[in-house]
Length: 252
Image (cartoon, rainbow, N blue to C red; front, side, top):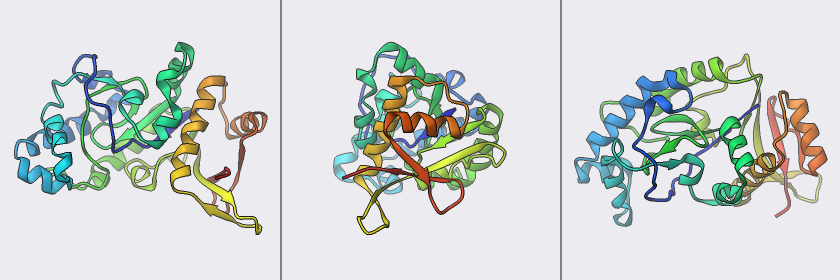
């Protein structure tokens, strides 16, 4: 099983790892796409006015332009520790033991805009780039990434993928049709026989789900296996009306 997570807009600064190693990232066939985006982002960030406009940054976010300029040389840290925000705070990977962190490294890809899907323990620098950004010299990121990422997933994914990405990041690399997958929506029962989608709790529930998996480190190869694990854990996962979509049911 592989789990695909979205990134977060907010990130920790700094790091004590070596500079970005493109060859060491998961899905190495994406090297040409990664190189093109990083070079375009570094070039854009040489012009602070243009970078602020293209990246849609507020005055308080201008420091992110310096992060982008230093992408090739800045220190790194594991991706799962780099990202902050609701999902990654709920996952709280830093507090997990070594075996659980290694499980994350083997089973979790985080889908970033500049690097594509990367392993949870792959070292990355701080950066600023969203899925919907159009960089000078690079076509819309969706066109740039989608086909190559789908092919890379087809070559390296196992028999089942749990997709916890947002729709924007899912569009940067759809799961190949030949691979069994489930796209997860987080809902709560409304008390009247229906369900209601959640926003804040959506990210929190996904973080808790991945943490529970890392703690238990189950050997799962199929959708049925994941559903059986969830039932044992007291986690409610059920089919949605849309084919290939699961509902993760939580209480607010």
